Image 1 (spheres, rainbow, N blue to C red):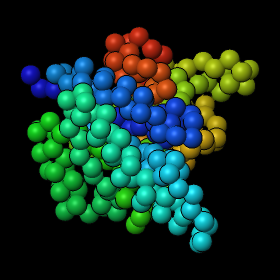
Image 2 (tube, one colour):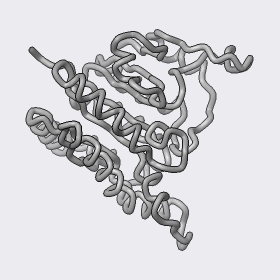
Image 3 (tube, helix red, strand yellow):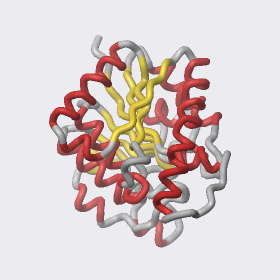
Image 4 (cartoon, rainbow, N blue to C red):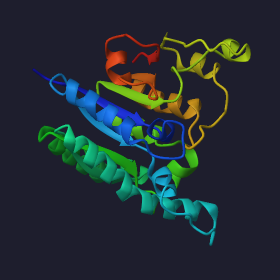
Length: 254
């Protein structure tokens, strides 16, 4: 039986559970769900959180532009983040691998073929690729979108069946409901222009993405025939609950 392929994008707010520290409990929750679903689904993860991981250990002096300090923090935090994933997943019988990509990789045909072939070999051998932007040489993720666009591009390249973007809301809320402070989720939508009219321009606490960057990712996925789900990653069991339709989230149809 062919497994369905899920590209799971985890934002910084999900990984920290809206605190200042990477949550081992949240990473364990994600691993536990992947372990429970591994007979029917294969997972590729795009994970933010390297900068948040570094901030737990160091405070760098601002000896340079802020963007360079953030790149330095990402360099320090990335191995810590991978270690936390590796330790928690290994206890659940899951194996992980690290892939650092930059947007320029998606502009070169040779690089795209290498990414696709390498990740397909990893997945075929039951390794879960954990992808992040190579922040020490590229600044797009730091500046522009908390890995949302990277997730969309990767989902398209790897022909995922579903792109799940885990954030800290129950999907995308209607503008009217937010104005009255009674958030109501848009549960199903196919018109992305219409959806764009519903969102504000606020950014997340730790990350750099707002809902617009998630819609941009969903646009890339939709153009590749991939459905996007925007779910509340702060909730326990959020992947399984979304698959079983037990939670409220936004489904952007392909």
